[in-house]
Image (cartoon, rainbow, N blue to C red; front, side, top):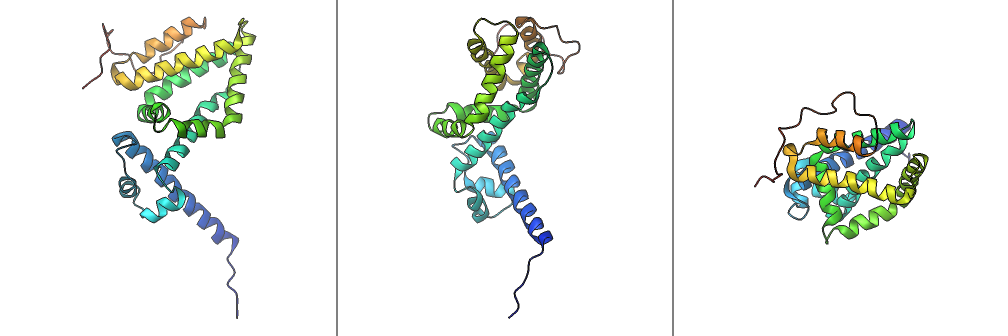
Length: 219
């Protein structure tokens, strides 16, 4: 008998196809979760959106919780991307503010989904487990920010790190709630001012809507 040998090229091609299928499933899950909400979405919805069989989805992700964990992991990876920013402490802080504002404007559905998964009682344990899995990256992020604030002369760099992240997360929350009516560009300028940074030279986003007396969510 002759054994059939699989060429390295075939192995690589199969691996690429598997990765493409996995990414297509994750992309579909993100879209469906963002549109319907995690709890209202079904695996059948994701199957239809991805154009794959149910068996293929469950091969990679046995259930919705596994999809949510993977998406949350990628969200945390994006947050940790600030570690790649270089420059002086002020330059890094300004870039972090601008990065968060730009992300809030460009990826509102993703931000809204991540926040809902992090805060809802039924899915918070998924986030907690994902955060624990990414603990090394989270610690590096915390230490990076604390070192930044120490270089800027903060008396309590750890507290400043917590406050900075809380302020930015608050901006994301408001932006996801109020959408286009939230004045992100003016908030960005105010954040630069709040942290004693040079004012931005050029707008990051389109002009804000006219000043609002009170923010109200659309029904």
